[in-house]
Image (tube, rainbow over all chains, first blue to last red; front, side, top):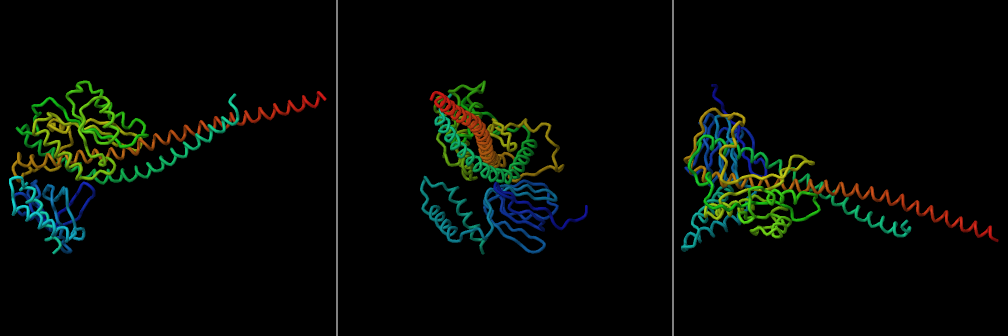
Length: 134
Length: 286
């Protein structure tokens, strides 16, 4: 099999097709850790964790904040079904920072009622948003 | 024969109604186009979601999993999607009938999650157990609403409050045909995929994390996407149904107006003839 340089990357949200194009590599965060996918990857389904999505196109690279969903990786194709994903231009820095400090505050002053998992996810999301803007 | 004035009054009242139905038809046509575009844009997501979940289920076979086995409770939760407003032909009653006329369901065993005012009112009247839901979500469905609802349903399922979860909505096939549909959400049916088109990828799909864990995370997303898809389709169907209903109302009004116009003209002609006869008779008598 001839070595392919790129693969088809599709990112789909419930409301629109977020991205569709040829990419050389895509990086994102999964429940098992960060993953970088090159063409010819073994078939794999992974669950997304909040983090930065980095698309390396032949012409350059693009970033987005990916919050929830899952990805289906095939040899020549990657489909990411994203529940929530944003381009940096769609992110409100002020809101993200406020959300970050709120989540940190909740985690610091934890009481038995605190929903720790939720606070942690909120923190991860806010961090991903801030990171995507940099 | 009714008097000329009566006929005239009746005709102008029908004309007024016709104007209203015509305007409503135009409004729902525009809304239908928008709702349909939305439904089509989101379709991609569900097809992918459906394929993925199916391929996982096919691979893991008949695995022991809490979302794949019926719950202990005999209660059934039914999410019924109707509209907030009427004047949409049989749209609402068709969906409601799916539940009330179901041959195997007892009234006591069904918990209705009514989305939309019309459904809520109807099920209250029939004496079903009705759970309150946000009523705005049928007007302009947002993914977050579907997520909240599926979270609540899963909580009820895991807590053994309900044993099965169904979804009743109107599927949008095209502008003129909308099909009331009853869909089983939980437990997920493992047998439905028989006879589907062969899997595109021959290679064995790997999972990270492991199967059961992946199912834990995927099935709620699967459910959310089904609910969201149903909401989108229902919104399109509602506007389609209303458009049709208003269209036939407008043409009925047209027919009635024509009929009344004819009667009015006859009555007018009759009265003129009568007056003439009277005058002539009067002149002759002189």
